[in-house]
Amino acid sequence: MKSLKKYVILLCISGLYACNDSLLDKRPVDLLTPEQVYNSPEAVEAYFATLYKDLPIEDFSFCNGRFGEFPANGDGYTSNWTWETTNSTNASNNDENWGKLYRAIRNVNTFIKEIATVNIPEATKNTYTAEAKFVRAYYYQELVKFWGGVPILLEPQTITNGNTADLNLPRSKEAEVWDLVKSDLDFAVANLPATSVYGRANKYVALALLSRTMLHAGSIAKFGTVQLEGLVGIDPAKANGYLQASYDASKKIIDDGKYSLFNKYPTDKAQNFQMLFYELQGNSEAIFCKGWDYESTRRTHSQDLMALPVVIQSPIGYANRMTPTLDMVERFDYVDGTPGTLNIGTPTAYVHYKSLQDVFKNKDPRFFGSVISTGSPFKGTEITGQRGVIYNGVKYNGTALNQYFDIDKKQIVAAPTANSVRATGNSNNGAVTFWQKKFLDPARPANLCVDWSSETDWLDMRLGEVLLNYAESAFELEKPASEALNAINQLRTRAGVAPLTTIDRDKIRKERSVELAFENRTFWDLRRWRTLTTEFSGWIPTGLYIYYDVNARDYVLEKTPNGGGKTYQAKDYYFQIPAAERSKAGSKLGNGNPGY
Picture: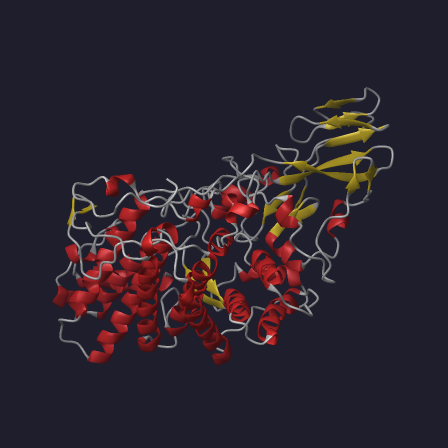
């Protein structure tokens, strides 16, 4: 996206229209005639700037189920909808996405229709159309993920007072929407160049989206149930066709060798995984990124403000919005491949540790690259979440940050005394002992992490995900086990974890949850596998209580509930079609999705 700013500047200089702060918020058809747009490369780029700005990427501004919300609000990401973070909520259906996506589709349909009528070289026309179809596929795959079958529009619809006035069409079957996504992406793959500027689609970006979307569709067909005569759910007979399309797209990316797993810091596996999501310009693994510091809109976000541990919080407050659960932490294996359950014993038989970091020793380096663990340093400060102390077998719990235990008085006090030890750590919740590191800027000083100050780009598609898609599609298609095993082991080897010797569905799924943690993929995986209801039936997230044992002069830890329960029902595999759309006069959308 950063590359688009030069084209907007060129348009301003050429006098085609006035440059202002809301330039990219205006519909391009309101600014230029078709001949002006399509005969001016700079104007075409500006048109695409709008299409990309509206792209429904689930990034820092995808909060509480809405696109374009306050960037990096933190407490409404899809990781909060699953087991990944403690600020646990159920998935949110926000009706406004419906209108946003169809208004965006209107723009791309206008582009596709009008470019066919102008006098430009056929090759140029095909390239422009291919890029527009990639964008349209991205819009539709988001619609069908949310609602199943939706109306398919391939012509520009009329917009009146911000509403899609002629969107009064019946829903297409879910499979028909996925087939449109595939068709548009197939065209994009065939007609886009192999390279593009940063933040723009090319052949491999289209292949990566094809890999992702067809795996989703294939899973729905294989594990889901057809309802409402196909408005939701897909005929199981179509499963292998979609899975094969995902497999072929993934294999093409892998075999062509244009991308390689990021390995800039091979001697420090944790740092390497952390930097994968920070050093994106020239990143060998990054297939498609969204820029967050382009000058045309000064569009920045607030991830660092919201996700920092409270001990190093910004001068304006916030922090602690992205705190991983113990459940997520224990999904990371140890480097020898053994399960990642922490060895902490029980409250009647604690395991004692001289250092808080010792309990995490030999964990998968991806854990240290993704999570700030209690007792570890970040931005020059040791981050801990101590709950209290144990003295002579009695627990003393703190009530605020950075309190002390007066040994003589046997009580918690606010300031250190002549005979005291630290009683509480750097958390305003005693069970918060982990903080999300992935996507945080490691260089920006904490006192400069204020709202609208973060510029870290969003890594939307990468080779790591493609390898996982390849492994899963190969396994579900019953390809030789070596194919899936090799793909998974490439990721584990890069991470510094013992390779697997056998492969099965559970191992593939677990690897996805670790490699893609906090990347807004897990919720959709659980949905397409139809395991959301089994994973979450009265589920309660867990955390750690950490105590300093005054007598033993070391630390003990115990597992504790940390947050409200979560249950999903079968209806939650789709959101309900917006009531406002269903209630319009003459609506053909029907009564909506099952269970509502």
